[in-house]
Amino acid sequence: MRHLLDTKTLAREDALRILDVAEDMADTQQREVKKLPTLRGKTVVNLFFEDSTRTRISFEAAAKRLSADVINFSAKGSSVSKGESLQDTAQTLQAMAADAVVIRHSASGAPRTLATSGWISAGVVNAGDGTHEHPTQALLDAFTIRKRRYGADSRGRDLTGMRVTIVGDILHSRVARSNVWLLHTLGAEVALVAPPTLVPQDVSAWPVRVGYDLDEAVGEGPDALMMLRIQLERMNASYFPNEREYSRRWGLDPERFAALPQSTMVMHPGPMNRGLEICAEAADSPRSTVLDQVTNGVSVRMAALYLLLAGERPAPGADDDAQKEDAR
Amino acid sequence: MSTRTVLHDADISRALTRISHEILESNKGAQDLVILGIPTRGVTLARRLATQVAQVSGSPVPVGALDVTMYRDDLHRHPTRAPQPTDIPPGGIDGKTVVLVDDVLFSGRSIRAALDALQDIGRPAIVRLAILVDRGHRELPIRPDFVGKNLPSARDERVFVRLTEVDGTEEVAIES
Image (cartoon, rainbow over all chains, first blue to last red; front, side, top):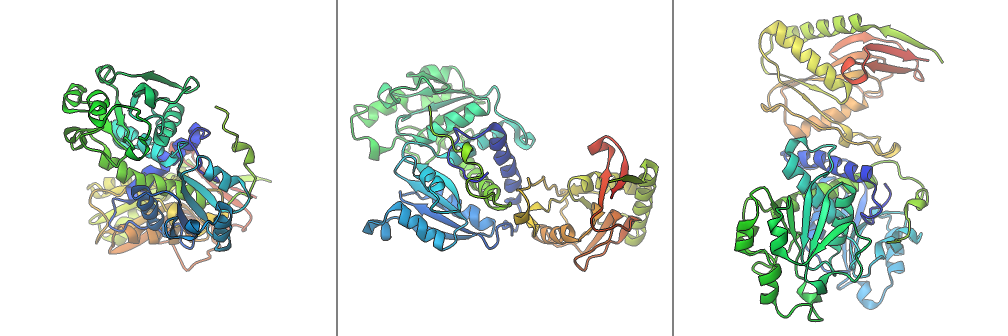
């Protein structure tokens, strides 16, 4: 694996490999000494053009637990605010000999541009690009589902037969997109539930079922119910009348939570808007995986960095045919 | 290229029996013993040794696996290796006598990595090393305490340990 750019082109074996290595990483995080010497002498740059707290600190923790040196670069207060282009920023990082670049950018496709442009030789990890993908989030969600279902027996298993329902703002959500592709690759059945205004125009090529009624979806008793955050900063075109209306129809309120089977796990990528898309009862219940997702996020990102950086680096361009253009 | 079998199944089982007695002798019994195998075949050998030690001494011996992948010094020279599970018995290793078990001792670098890995897990009182085949060519000042067979080899020869649980057959072969 040279880069981790999306889950759409991620093969099932590669996905399982990341998840299985993450199991080993998770085991090391139970120890008194959590740090491994594996990436000593490697430099990981967190290149964040968009605000993020949890993803950035999760990547930072992951890199540091593997003994890599971490450089945090956020666009605010940097040369980017003076108008530096992505190319110049990238070439600066190349000149500093970065081994991996973790990039978050508001433009969909920025990580791919960085990976395929030839500006840098470092491995690129997509930490969220526009409304395109957020692969490590999907991987940690899949890891969390697998771990909840199979416990210590998780290694090597996929998600065949699991039913996952993703609820909320699908239109703007890169988390939803990454999850749709990854969960499908791993054999899960994915359903989307959203207000019609927050479903992308054409999802006919997505391997999902689309519904508009949360009560119906709750009644089906999925194995996992993933609530997405309503990104208030993107709610600029009256997608729904007001927050109360959204909450009443598409929020996981106490009544809906009570109607869910005991076996359904409630997931949320965070940060949560309590009382809007998810009620406190659901968020704080033992069936909620919110904090597991944070913990697992570090293990999954350790696995991704390990697989990208620890081995012999293939020559640049060696696996360019794997970088197929987004056709769907 | 020729392959020669140097240990048959009876030889392997005899070597393991002898090592288990030697472990008990040097430890003066089975108290505080923890046997840890290095994946993959070291774990199989460790389980067999633990069974035998338990039979001879009459008390069960904790056995586990210690993966050293993340501690290797040659990671960047090979395609990425997948780590294997590490499984430390519930009693831990603090203050215990840990016997590391591996199939072949060659450069000594895996054992160096294993010592680093142990250090991150706890502080054993004593660490010993049991090896089925010692083929020489050490690159580090490391020596085994218990050896199944000393097998003089040329550096470019390859030694294969095959065990029933992993490979379906039972032998040690050298290919030159």
